[in-house]
Amino acid sequence: MVDSVAILGGQGQLAFELQCLLAPDSGRSLSILGREDLDVTNAAQVDAVLSGIHPQIVINCAAQTQVDVAESTSENTFAINATGAGHVGRWCAANRARLVYISTDHVFGQSIDRAHARPWRETDQPQPVSVYARSKLAGEQATLEACPQSIVVRTCGLYGERPAKGKGNFVQTMLRLAQQRPVLKVVDDQWCTPSSAQDVAQAICSLLDDPEPFEPTTSLTSRIWHITNTGSTTWAQLAREIFSLQGLTTEVTPITTAEFNAPAHRPGYSVLDTSRFTQRYGELPGWKEALATYLQRLQRSE
Image (cartoon, rainbow, N blue to C red; front, side, top):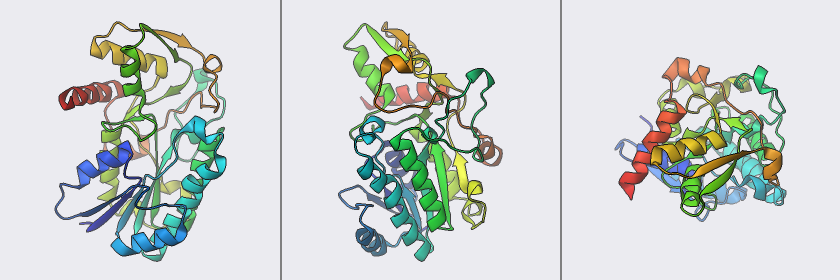
């Protein structure tokens, strides 16, 4: 049984779900560290704070995740997502702590013909096309190289009961906009797998309960795990499903990525192949089922 777990980036939606799952376990001591508690860009502070609580497992959710903002704040984005990840990794290595670094489907940004597409495997070569994506890939590499007992979890399109601070999540944004406008324009040429933060958190807990993924190995890609709900969709199709489940009459007008014209490039196809995780731990629910469950949770919490 793990005695001590520290979750960095404690104000995010995945961190919240991890806290809900790990806190009831009386055998665990749980520390939740937000940015006001720990600035991962400060190596001395990382050493001091983590040495003060000495966790046996660190889950690094600390990140700058605002994709468009990252384009104009690249230095700060890399400091948090990459350099900070290295600081955490080196502390974990020196103190023999296991480490989980949370990453993103955005590392696969290369153009692809969807007619011939297949979900991205852990062994596929990333080609990030935004500052955010490049910083997260650098964070993966810094983590894996610094700490032999580390793993990377790539996930996609997270939504949770507590939206990410300063960002929100797509589902709650659509519900809010549906109250303001009868028609919404939503991108329909980006394919991914929107994923429940609760489901992803449960999957991460499965990894935490299994020491084998954290055993040191010379193969860095064998320490990368793809974890999402199953299936794939576009943001426009997801919006339609949200409105259908909620009985809303809001219409969705599909637009292209070029028409949306966001500052940062997004992947056209970033569906992750989760078969490696599924074969060992079991399959997560389909994205439609997960969405329905999430919306029911939201209604109960109102």
